[in-house]
Image (cartoon, rainbow, N blue to C red; front, side, top):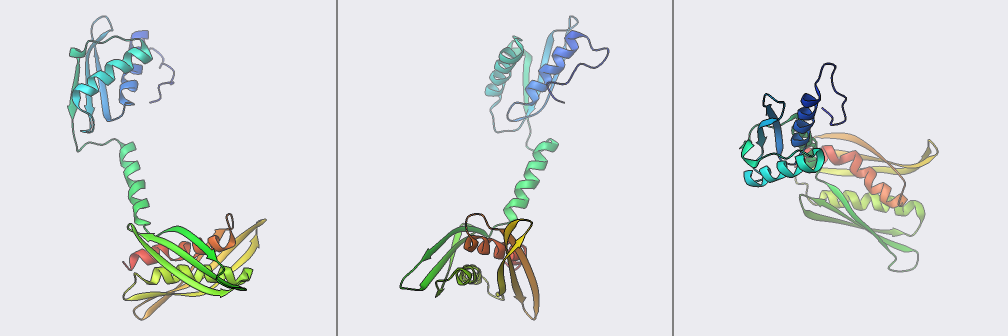
Amino acid sequence: MSGNQAPKPGDAPAQWALRRAEELIASLAGVLSARIVADRAGGIEEVHVLTTPEIQPKQMVRNVESALMAQLGLKVDHRKISVAQTAEMKPIQVLEKEAVAEAASRRKLVFVDLVIESPRPRRVTVRVLLKLDGEEMEGVEEGVDEARSRVQLAARAAVKAMERELEESGVVLEGVRVVDAFDRKIVLAAVQGVSGRNSQLLVGTCEVKESAEQAAVLAVLDATNRWYLQQK
């Protein structure tokens, strides 16, 4: 329930104030739920707070006192505030955040850096750095210093970096191309994922923002990331 929500029809001012106080306490860091017991006059008789173990009970009591005073002007005796901790019960917001974090953690192969150097006239070296579970993987390709060639070299270097960690499978670059679509430049990459006797065509895209070479690397990752992690 939002702290800005209007009172419900029939709510007395005291009930509305207590509801606001409960919402405020529930919004504090580490709080899973909060319930206020009113006395006969509509004041605060008891405050019950359920929290995670991340904040100590004494600190939580001080947090509740400070929040009620600062936000609502309510002075509550600390002896009226009881704190219980649990490591099991989680609100839906926490569960949703954990699910998002878990999904993100499965995407472990990430782009780190792209370096393009010219060791001699009309030749270029493209170095791609990826990271997997904290370990860096590097792929290097050299070729002709020409725009289309650099895009190809970047994609091939990304594939080479990925192959360093594969044992019973492999990736083969079918091709990479810069295309115009929807008033934008987009890199399209096609990669064969080979596992045992099976192969699968994997396709990825990335809009050109920093450079076409970087977009080529990201398009390769877009094509292969899910397949690649299944091989690990």
